[in-house]
Image (cartoon, rainbow, N blue to C red; front, side, top):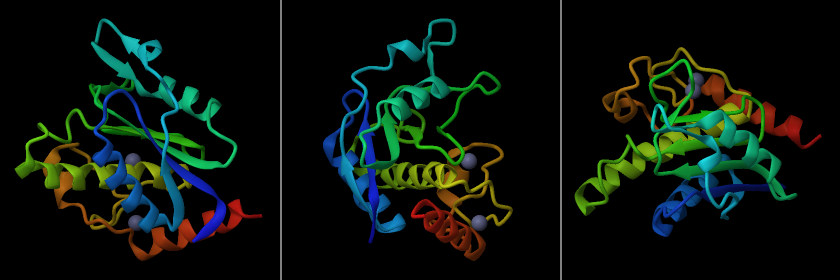
Amino acid sequence: MNNMGSIIVSPIGDIPSWMSDIIATDVGDFFEFSTRVEKILDDIFFAYDADRNQYHSTKILEKLAKNAPNDCIKIIAVTKEDLFIPILTHVYGEAQLGGKACIVSIARLIADLEVEIVNKGCKRIVKEAIHELGHTFDLRHCEDERCLMHYCYCRRLEDVDRKSSRFCRYCKIFLADSIRDLGR
Ligand SMILES: [Zn+2]
Ligand SMILES: [Zn+2]
């Protein structure tokens, strides 16, 4: 376990607390950082685009990074709202490459909160959360299709489900180097 600070899972709006807790547990296990759930933004109306009826994720990341608590090494925000960046119709998430903040939207990853589909939906959300956090640790997209840092070209749910829950050995080494540099 690293003592450099905590990863914060930050729910936006009424994300169920059990979902934040699952993400925090899985992300903490994966990155070996202490992880806690903490609300940082009260709302994201400032990022709302009325023409698209979606939220501009880049703006949310800037505000999250600005409001990050002192002991926070990375923030992964979770929202129910549909996210976009101007060049794409939608994104499952976005990260500041080598920065502090990233976000995932559950809007397209989980159909509804019925018990049968919650497990599958949660797995997707955790995968996307780890992928986006990987970017904040400066990891780029990986060519290995089995690696969690692989880019889903078609951005379909089948691709997310097919992705493994692990980094390839190169991404693992890169991550370890990146974490070591943070401690300097
Ligand atoms: Zn990515
Ligand atoms: Zn990889």
